[in-house]
Amino acid sequence: MGFGFMGFGMLFMAVFWIGIILLAVWAVREFLPRSQATNGSASALDIAKARYARGEISKAEFEELKKGLV
Image 1 (cartoon, rainbow, N blue to C red):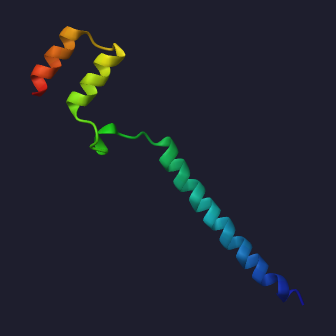
Image 2: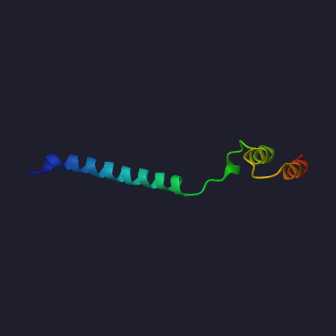
Image 3: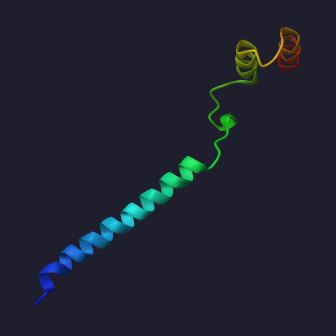
């Protein structure tokens, strides 16, 4: 008696542990800082252009950065 629920219990435990693992993976990916340099999509000149466009640096600073990068 009671062996009919044994399969349900095993299935529930598997789903539980898979959920815990997925939650841990999500937390690590969500809360650890990401580096922009690792994706390789933006060069240093592109970053300088974006900073200049946002007004974070002046034209003189942009020209100086551009000379140093080229």
